[in-house]
Image (cartoon, rainbow, N blue to C red; front, side, top):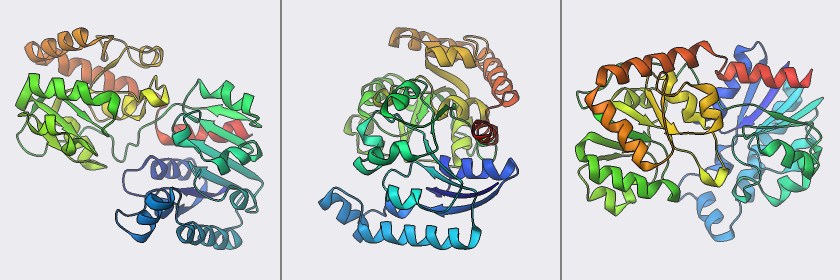
Length: 334
């Protein structure tokens, strides 16, 4: 199949990984980068316009669509695939000549932050809507979607694999991911409790005054190989969910064990389906149980390493790569 793929193509993005997954599954893929629309460079004219007008700059949107139309005329795709292209012109996307038009959302499509008025107006026109949230399936069908496919998140072996640490620093516990209100209090508590044995990395954390006041290591975002190296420096890698997306699993569910890290996360139905508690991961239901797990990791590092290795084997031997998800999506179309 010839796939014209529209999505954010920055290094380490899930969109790039899924595009490569389709290629690995044997399809011919041409990628159009939507980043200038979805994530304009800070302080750029497009970024400033979006802050003032509360919508994407029309000139950046027009430029991306011109690139899409030009590629389509040469490539003549069988399928147009949009990875969370909610901020593009939906009518124009759907009018790109192709037998199939598929939209993929990695986030909760019932969360207004993950949609747009234009997307919602045309959602039912997509041939297939793919979601990583099981609870979205019935909601999308009730909204009028023609067809809906649930697939889990995934990992990319190009980035998420065991690797050597960079430097001698080692942490008992840590979290790698974006700052969110539902995560902040826990990060502050753990930073003050574990101090230099705790690491938090990701967008926004350096702006949290209480974290900076602790002796924990606080850093910016890491992607690609740097993510795997950071995982290697942590004994207990926290996998935190996004309550606004009503997550019961997330990309980190696969990425952390695939990178050889010990998975420590909330006890959810999907987590218990994917990994066995205490033998392949450590799951917790409250902060008291989390602290018991961290104490166990501190006193029995060999056991922690054994559990991490078992979790790696479980995920690596399963069908949890982006190429596997690409094949699931193609199977839903045939």
